[in-house]
Length: 401
Image 1 (cartoon, helix red, strand yellow):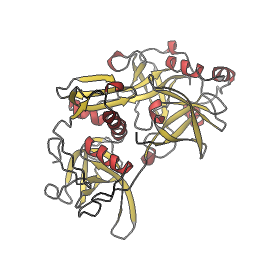
Image 2 (cartoon, helix red, strand yellow):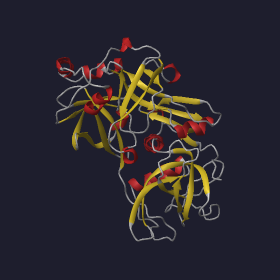
Image 3 (cartoon, helix red, strand yellow):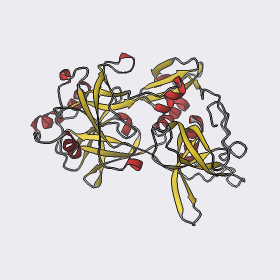
Image 4 (spheres, one colour):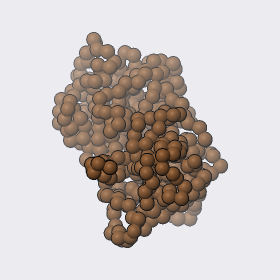
């Protein structure tokens, strides 16, 4: 069995990473005088949340970290959003530098019948055609030729977060050093991209999403109809994880509701584009209730909701049954990190920033609140129709730091 207790050695060019059973890395303060060991849980600039070796959590501002640790947070957070805890898979073929596997359905809440590459040196531990379970961390794509000579590209993963981040470090800035050594995997240079959801607040192209969706992006695109349109970042609020984009296209706005109308237990709906590379690019709707009037550690800025969300839902509208936006979906307890920190999976624990914290950002954009006030809204639409018209897929190409 593949467990977190085993020490894996990743053979990737000149880099070898070995981690302990808790996958706890060493962190350093900005001045280099203090260190501690812990596992990253989440990074929502400027906040960093780390699980310490004794199981407690620590939240702090990124300004306390070294430049190297900030870069690690940036890459690790992207990795965690596409990673899976304790996933079952069948080994199809063990290679010199990894193994080709097929995801299995038994006791697997994430099952999509995906074929994957898992990097590492498994020749002495793993057998073809057997089934194993393991935590896997997203490490970009892998291209190979199948038995019929056809080229296939699949997602690749690593057995630890640190190994996945190391692979991304190389992908973003590859080196020719030792490139001729035997058993060296072919790691192509890739852009670190992300996707999320946005919703329109005006008819002339203003859309709202999360700051973390677009943070660090070299290029932002919003799909309007069947066409991706370049988007410009016009306002951002890192503290509350909100951003306003502008596209040169007509959009259909959703009405912004009153935050004080929301009560514990109210029915809500969420619209977004989760895992578009797997689930497709049509809007997905999930329903639930307001399960908490405060967020993690009683953060008053958030609602806790039990509507299912996945990577790609970030920035989507949280709708009341009157079809008004009462929040912006911006966080979920990351399954992989929580499983490693607590030994159990979170069950429908998700968060949305309250609409009250969006209004100051809209007011910061000249003329935007006046435009919002002029908008009219159809009253004869279902919630699904409302989302189909007014929610948009956001795709970003990201910088490495």
